[in-house]
Image (cartoon, rainbow, N blue to C red; front, side):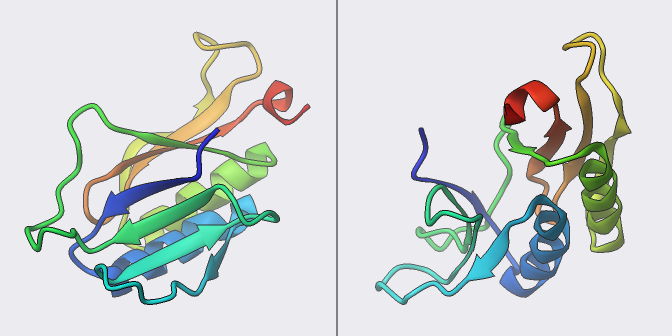
Length: 133
């Protein structure tokens, strides 16, 4: 459905450390971003070339800021990957928005956690076997 999703950052080095740690347990790896005349960026992909996740310095040169009501949700391969990614995010400058655990109000098998990245962007890590079927 998506080609890519992008969030902004005011410190790409810090964002790179955070997202490398959080996305590794999800099976995503960083790839090179070819300069295209736009702002500096980082990119992560899974086994296929798309979809992609990018972190950019804002194109307009203004400070990056999180969107009010915005959140990115990443599907994880297991509950353990939720736990690992959440812990890695906290160790690498992220903030807690909801510890890993079952969220039965969404579905009986819904297991997830919530984080803020170092720039304040909200992330959700979710494992549901039905999403992987």
